[in-house]
Amino acid sequence: MKPKIHITPTAQSLAEFACDWLVNLIEEHCRTHSAPFTLALSGGSTPKRLYQLLAELPVATIDWKRIVLVWGDERNFPKEHADSNFRMVKENLLDHIDIPPENILAVPNPGALPEVAAQQYEALLRKELSPGANGFPVIDCVLLGMGEDVHTASLFPQTMALRESSRWTVANHVPQHNTWRVTLTAPCINSARHVAFLLSGQGKESALQTLWYGPFDPQLYPAQLIQPTDGQLWFLADRAAVGKVELTN
Image 1 (cartoon, rainbow, N blue to C red):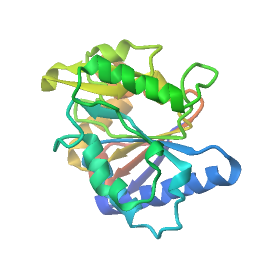
Image 2 (tube, helix red, strand yellow):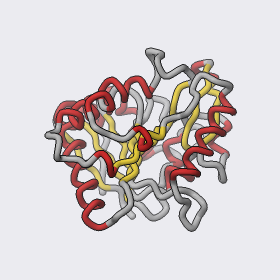
Image 3 (cartoon, rainbow, N blue to C red):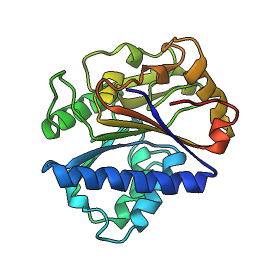
């Protein structure tokens, strides 16, 4: 299935489009499915404005009781740490919406031993999300960013997580930042119904050029691993992120 592409003039218009796009996905799902809509959240600066816009929607726009939130990755810090992805989502979204606590599937014990945190997170997801035919959960939508080194989630170049083929989540040591992360694995992400890269700012142009036209080498360019098995891949970007890269459907 070919990727779908939408390019907006500015970072603000990107966030506004992504908000409308996500609301439409949720509404369509809720019309046709009784199960909750599962949404895997991305950390970083680009989705922050999206979360703020979601929080500012009129109360009846989204029935948050029918939404289950998953974290695509988490840094190995306690939830109150300034660099915590959970804290960013909490401050910009969770604190402003009426969502049941049991619908918030964050990493249970970030800041603990990384492998323990990853195992606990996988156990939580396996308890709450049903596996599909391939053994991985069918998440309705996964939001992703992409770093200048072409990493996504916490799948960094030449790290062990890139080789994982059976687990849903793993602890991944990132030598580039001398840190540990907990991340969804590539096959888990690829089992989603919709996977969307949100890209903003000039710093993304070179990475996007590599992802789109560079040699296929996912050990060096991990975002190349993201190829949904049966779902739809999206690129939602502002003009600065695209630059001179020629994106074609």
